[in-house]
Length: 293
Image 1 (cartoon, helix red, strand yellow):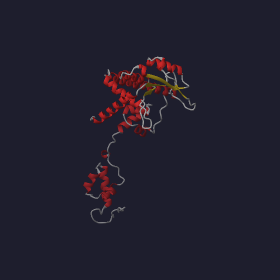
Image 2: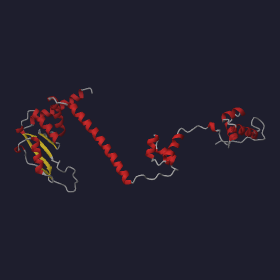
Image 3: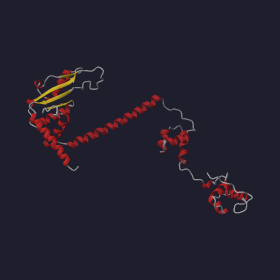
Image 4: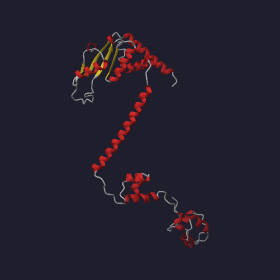
């Protein structure tokens, strides 16, 4: 770093009388001149020399730039002295909490106006109202989507059923080339749509068998009655119920009156139907690839 050398007061030349220049600079500063005005008045074109001449002298008030947030700062301090919290000051002024904290941290903290229990109760009421608004919006979107579907054509139901089966139904594997039409699900509405699809395909009820799969700790009889009512099938269409062994170390969530296990829907002599389903699915795949979406 280059060392700045003070001018020699006894030297000759432009800055020879340094102390005289310093006194003149101080006088001009007291008169309210800016650095630029003093530099031009004294013909000092060296900034280092100008800094030395003005060292220790305060700048004129008019040359100081005002702070943009001075007004906000004063208002924040007034509100804090009135007992407002950071949150309420932020709502009032629209500035950040970090700025408010810097502006008012030397002021006494306002006394708590509510107990913790009262504040918690207020927060819970506010959150309950927010949850209510969210639920209303959720239901609005669902209802709009329901109306948008309208009435399904036979073709739409056919394509929907193919996709449904290929997602949830049994499929032939290289290690198990069985062409069996088995569909299992726990969602009653899914079962309803699937049965409507089988009726569309002309599968008679006599070729359909049902099997309930449920945990042994559940109400097995109630589940069997539930699925029988849902399908409208005769009790003779239901095979033996499969009980899943309960692991006491597992904390099951699917419990209670709304738990009915899963229902397996099997189409007897379904090899040809399986081939139709598989072919239709690959037709959907090819069409989706060809379409420019």
